[in-house]
Length: 240
Image (cartoon, rainbow, N blue to C red):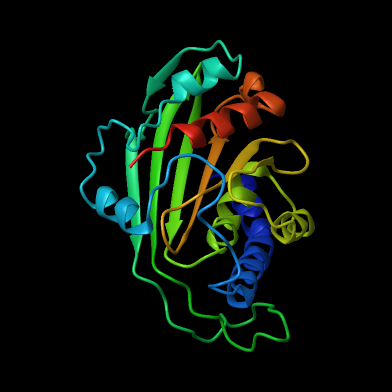
């Protein structure tokens, strides 16, 4: 790693800690009974279905739940070649979290005064499908949480990383509560599409569409309104 990259990485640490504070604070303040996750959005998946499917997925694909990026891009008017996987990335990845109990904040980390300790985080099931669009890696990420109205908050560090979003913008984005079925773009470059998806039973589900441009050029056809349309189309594809 070069000195410039090391310096840039260190500069991001306070912002990421700030994002984590936003995530945990918002999740702690969310009520498990104040959202109706059965209305709007695409197909009805439950948290248990997402988790059980993720446990048995092959890294070579295909992407589960009927997700088809090539079809979604075509529907959004984006005419670019799509292949599964990317350099050093398998087509499918999973991350199953068992939840974390409340604990002390890291030494030196700033945090909201009303949160003297890091709130507990719920279990989670995260599925990532990676593609190459043109020459740029593109990710579909699906996060399921068995608690209402917290999945977007838990996804905020991911959104900040791929959307190049500042902490203030991230806080505002988190505060603008999206309804199930609503697709939004991140502020600024509008480079991340985010959809809250209706779920079956209790829980919360969010889908994002992003580009990984750390070592690649930005795919300009997948920014702004075309990105929003493609993200919304992916959400409608979801099936148990």
